[in-house]
Structure formats: structure tokens, C-alpha cells
Image 1 (cartoon, protein in one colour):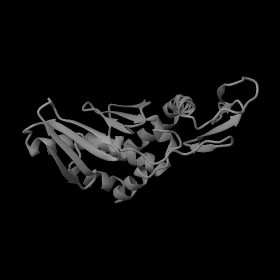
Image 2 (cartoon, helix red, strand yellow; image 1 turned 180 degrees about the vertical axis):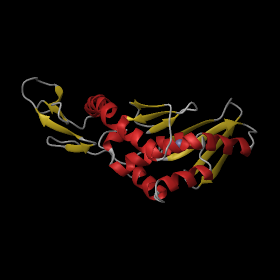
Image 3 (cartoon, helix red, strand yellow; image 1 turned 60 degrees about the horizontal axis):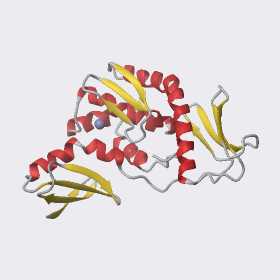
Image 4 (tube, helix red, strand yellow; image 1 turned 60 degrees about the vertical axis):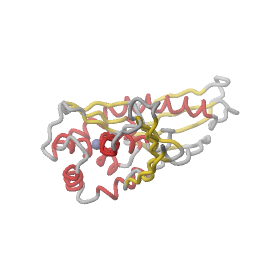
Length: 237
Ligand SMILES: [Zn+2]
């Protein structure tokens, strides 16, 4: 049996109830949320599942079209820059190099199609490896400064290499920030840090949580959320 639900944030939700399902499962498919559940699952449990997984759904939301790469492609990150250039010494290869002063170069042999999916995957891997290292140095001090500003004391900040979850706060108060934040402008980095810090007080996404977060962000929560959802990520997420 198929039903449609509407969620203010997630949009149309396609619900399938079937005897063959043994538990509730959700995923994104063709830009919409699909939930399957065992026959007879009460709507209350479906709604609870959506609430429990709201953050996950939001973070896994499919993103816009990919940005095409070309020789000379450059993108600025927090205190560093990524560049795609050309090299003629290693036939058929992509070579990456950090100059140690904030420029990371990926040099491709002429003729390599930078937009082939497997090449984009390699570029992504190189960029994330570099950004993870940079984030340990640059992002963690920023996060601690923001925490101090609000007199909050997370147990720890650490850097994750996942791209789908931008931030995560454990029930023990340990906050993981994705190295992908390095690609965001400062106020969006701050938005993600504040979101996770707000979880130290409100370990949920209740209206009290959003009220707190909005206060921390000087009333800009909705505006910043919109910006982050529309952000043109320079690597494939
Ligand atoms: Zn959250």
C-alpha cells in the first residue's frame, strides 16, 4: 500500500507499507524521501522515524548539478586554495602537491578528462585528504573559539572525512566536524559549529533547539540554512 505524506522541510514523502518489510527504512530516491515499513505500522511510528532521522535526511539530501572541472579551476577554502593545473612529467597521472603555504595543486597529464566520474573521484579523494589535514589545524581552533563565546564546553572537537554529515554531536558531548566545512564561507562554518554546540543543551531538533540556535546565530538560522542547502560544493558530495 502506498501513501504520500508532506513534510514542511523534506517535501513529499512516499510511504510504502508491505508485508515483506520487517522494519522501517528510509532513503532519498529521485529527489524525494521514500520510506518503507511493515504493513500496519501506525502513523505515529512513521512520524517518529522521520523525526529521529530528520538530520540524516537533511544531510543526505541530493545536491545540485556537479561543477565542471577544467585546467585552471581554482577554489578557495578556509585559509587555503585548491588548484587544478597541468603536468607533463608523469603520463596519464594526476599528481597532487601541497606547497605548505596553503596552496594545494592537482596536476593532470594533458588529455585526461577531468570530468570522467572516476577522475572526479580521484580529485575528491586528494582534496579531502588535504582538507582533513588543514582542518585539524584551522577548523578546530575556530570551533573552540565559538564554543568559548557561548561558554559551552564540548568534550572534544574532531575532524571527520565524511561529506554527507557536516557535523555530529555525540551524546557524550563530542563534536565531529566534517573537513568539508573548509570549503564553506565563514558564516556557514559558524552555522554548522553552532548547530552542533546547540545540541549540547538540546539533544534533539525540537522547537527549543531551533530557538536556541537562532538566538546563537542572531536570528539568521533560516537564512543560513537556506544558503548551506544551496551551496555549490566544488567537489562531489
Ligand atoms: Zn542536529
